[in-house]
Image (cartoon, rainbow, N blue to C red):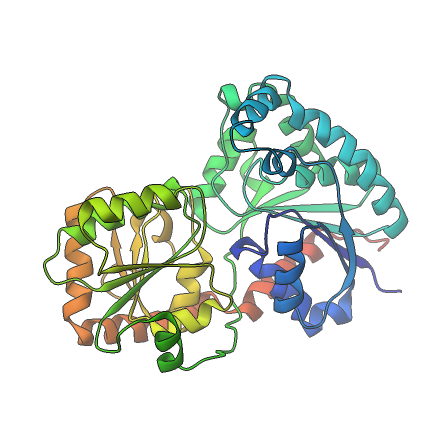
Length: 404
């Protein structure tokens, strides 16, 4: 019988950090080698994204485990900050990790996976991801791989009681995986890990088919065909640097039309800033797009302006796959792009430099074409889905025991 490879994930919706799961579930060679199954923290948004993105689903286990963030979201807005403060003061995350570990242990004993692959948005990330590692240790899963898709969060008053939990989880994991060097160094620092405990495996992207032509998408979104369109595709959070991008845009006399895709807690602040800067005719908020590749096809430039907490973002690789000119943060994409050859890199906090780079791309179609073509070649070499899955297969094999 084939060994079982079990995946576990916990995310609010099927976000960019889930992209590698799509690649794993679609890979025929991986399915030939392993029995594949998947457990996840269920929500309507996640279910919808999973079933749309993954045509051929593996064996599924949709879980509804206690989650303080879900509880907070159900409260009136005035009560949420109070609940979150109390949750931190009383170390609710630690208690829920222990409870959820007990629940997950029963599942893992039933499935008996040889490899558990935990896919986490960041560190500490999803409540049930840390619990899954503890459960795997108790269930005696032979190999535990733990993917951290972002920069780990250190210890302050918000995480005052979590050091012991972190140490217990780290002891239960055979190999941590990150997508680039910066998060590897950060994770090693926070968890006091030796270098050999963390592997750097770049994510791979399988481009999705377009459902609309460029003209159809522009018409649906009300984007004039004659305007140069710059797209920003990210959660509307402060760390994503949208406010700096708007301030950079305001510096320009001749501006591209900026399309901001996504939802998040910063939306009302950004809309107020938009009015303050007088950018209403040059910026569109479009909410969450069902097929990001349609928006990439309608755009001329991708702008990624994060402030250092989003290393090697998938959206940059997705734009590269489409031959799109990319202007990205030096803090997040320096391992994806070569400045001046496959894209432009800037420090978003320097709004004058960000504005200058945006202006150069807006007025120079030849530059956009040159950068986009080079980016597409670099994508094929570094970030395609097949080679990315093969890197993980090699990792699983290196952790295999002779009795599998």
